[in-house]
Every structure is written in C-alpha cells, then in structure tokens.
Length: 362
Ligand code: ADP
Ligand code: MG
Image 1 (cartoon, protein in one colour):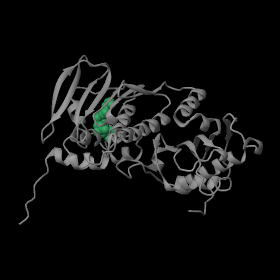
Image 2 (cartoon, protein in one colour; image 1 turned 135 degrees about the vertical axis):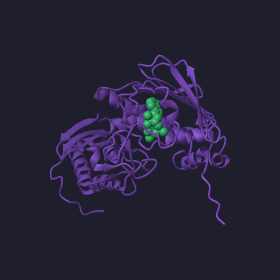
Image 3 (cartoon, helix red, strand yellow; image 1 turned 90 degrees about the vertical axis):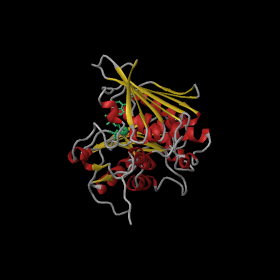
Image 4 (cartoon, helix red, strand yellow; image 1 turned 180 degrees about the horizontal axis):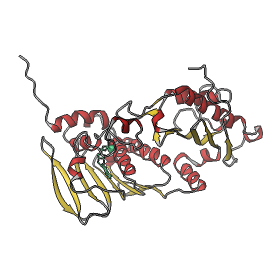
C-alpha cells in the first residue's frame, strides 16, 4: 500500500536547494543578485574559508520591513513578480522566490534588514523542520545584511562535493567578477579571510568603466580591445572585443550579458565565432566583454533555475545583429593596428547595416 506524506518545509527546501545552491559561489551569486535587485549602490562581501565557513553580504538597498523578513525566507515568496505578465517582462535578476529559502535550509543563515522609513531594524533566523522564523530587533543601517555560516552543515552528501578552499574561492571570485562587469554603477568590495581582494569603486564614465574592465580582465585585454557601441532594430550591443592578436587558447575571457544578466548561449557563441572566423587561427578563442540590450519582452529568462540560459523570441535577428556588428568592428580596424599591443581601445560606433536579413549558418 502506498503511504504518501507531505515533505516538511525544510526538506522540500533542501531538495530545491539542490538546483540553485551547488557551492559557496552559488550562494554569493544569489545574494549579490538580491542586493542589486534592491537597488544597492554599495555591496560589501566578506568570505571566510572559500565561503564554506562564512559568507557575509551587506548592501545599502531598500531593505525589508519586519513583516517581510520571515516571508522572504519561505519558498515561492517574492516581491518581484505578481503575474505571468510580469514574468514576461521581468527586469530584475531574481523572480523565483527560492534563493533565501534554499540557502537557509542548508546553512545557518542570519538576515538583518532595515527600510528607510522604519525606526527599528530586525533580524531573522529559521529553525526546525517547518522553518519557523524567529524575529528579534537588531542595530542596522538602511539596507540588508545576510550572513551564511557552515554551508551544507546539515547535508553531508553535498558537503562531500566541495573542493579545496582555494578552488571554492576562485569560483566565488568569478561570480563577483561577472556581476562587477555588469554593474559599473555599484561599488563592490570583496575580502577573503580578512584580506582585500577587490575594492571596486562605482565607474560612471567610460574611462572608469575601462579601468574596471582592466582590473578584472587584465590590462592586456583592455589595451588590445576595440570598443563597440552599435544600435539597430531596437537592439543595442556595446562593450569591448579583443583584436584577433589577443586571442586565447581557452574560451575563458568571454563575458556576454543580456539586459544585465550574464548568460551562456549557443546562438550568441555561434554569432561571435562567425564574426571572428576569418581572422582567428583554428583552435584560438576570442576574448570579449559584451552587453546586449533589448526589450525584456523579447527574451525569455525563465529557462533554467540558475538563469544562465535565455531564449530569444527572434533568435535570427539577434544572431544577425551580433554577427554583423562584430564583423564590422573587426573589419574596421586598420591593418597596421593589428600587430601591436600598444593600441588604446578605439571606438567604433556604427549602425549595423542589413540587420534583419536571415542568417544561414547554425
Ligand atoms: P527572488 O530574488 O527570486 O525574489 P529570494 O529568495 O532571493 O527570491 O528573495 C526573496 C525576497 O526577499 C525578494 O523578492 C526580496 O523582496 C527580498 N530580499 C531578498 N534579499 C534582499 C535584499 N538584499 N534587500 C532587499 N530585499 C531582499
Ligand atoms: Mg533572489
């Protein structure tokens, strides 16, 4: 005879956590996204022992009120969407309402927050199988601090998959780097075991942005990069692409953002590859930091729990636009520029001609 029973809230959350919380880096990704969604101007990230022992993220965003705090830790609770229509035009990084519930079910989580109009800040922790939240007053400025200790302390099977401290920290730093490249307006500090790793000030001007890219991707990349800024058919593509002379043996310096969200996408990869096809040696990989901006309604971000993938409504248009913009940018570089490493980033601003014609490659 079958004996069906409902899973406890904690167990259900732990199962869901399997999808979103793989390692300390995934915790940082989710918490950093929350801070950015809350409109933070400054985010401080403190990490101990690769993030396994402790991750603390403090932001100066909108904060949460007393009643919202316990809600934020329960599953499928979000302030970011209310309807399917909202989902189709979602502009925030989060919307699934799963991260805090998942993280708090596999760690010791402490959440403190204060809104601008509240007199008192509050702190919340979850306890037991039903994840009841315990509230208490705390001292805190406007914004939110999330502290995550002892990741996977109660899920030994997951803990087994954690790697050396250094490896975990490298993953975590990569996550911070990706976000830092997408939000030049936010200052971000990252420390590991008390040592400063990144102290990134907000970067309002083009020069500041290039400085941040150089800090995160290396001076050589920036010195060999062409800046592009192209707009056509409601699509905008901007950023930096390295000249073919600065190619890589691995595809490890490739950052592509769609409406601020870093993604990996076959269509995008293909379009970029095509653009470099005639100028790169076989087996070499281009380096780029690129931002595609388009109407959020034209791209579906709800494809995967970690939201690393997207689906374009008009993939052909997007492919063509990326290919043509990059191809032109690379072709416009004067041949005498191709040899040296002493080229400063040049600006190529143009409209992509003929966007909308179909592409035949796939
Ligand atoms: P999601 O981001 O998908 O909405 P989360 O579980 O990450 O789900 O967060 C749940 C809710 O908690 C958010 O919708 C938001 O309202 C609130 N929240 C989480 N982190 C912050 C933060 N740093 N500042 C303000 N509100 C936050
Ligand atoms: Mg979130």
